[in-house]
Length: 196
Image (cartoon, rainbow, N blue to C red):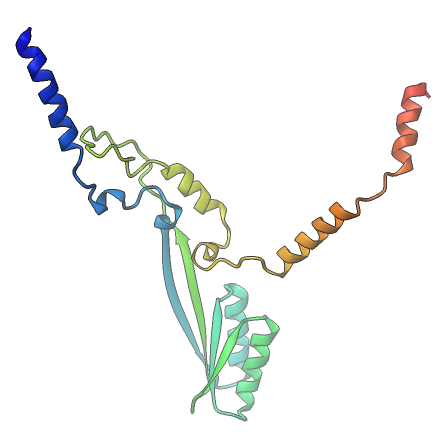
C-alpha cells in the first residue's frame, strides 16, 4: 500500500509535464471552417470582333452565363469596338478598355464553387492535445456554403450595398414614425365583442 502512495504522485507529475508540450500548428488547420470548402477558379473567354455577328456572339455568351467582368481590347475610333462597348453596357457588365491593334473582347469568369467535406466520424483515440476532430462542424459548414447562391460573397463580400442602406433607412424611419393604427381593426374587434 505504501508503494502505491509514492507511485501515484509521480504518475500525476509525469502526466502534468507531458501536457506542457506546445501544440503543433498543423493541429489547428482545417477545423470545419466554411472557407476551407471553397474552390476558386478563373476562366477567360476570348471573342475576336470581326463583324456585327461577333457582337451577337458576345451577347449570347453573356445571356448564357453572366461573366464577372470583361476587358475590351481595341484601337480608338473602331466601329466594332463601339458596338462591343454597347453590348457590354446593355448587360451592365463592368469592363475596362485597353489599347490594342486588334479588336477583341475578353470575358472573365471568376467562379467560386463549394465541394463536400468529409462528413463522417473519425475514430481516432490518440488525441493528446484534446483538439476537435477535423470533421467536426463539417455538416454545418457544408450546408452554409450550399445555401449561399452567390459564393463570391465568401471571397469578396459586398458589405452594405445601396439596397442594404435603403432598407436600413426604411426600418429606421418606421421606428421613428410608426404607422397609425387603422380604424377597421378596432371596429372589427368591437364587433366581435358585441357579438354582431
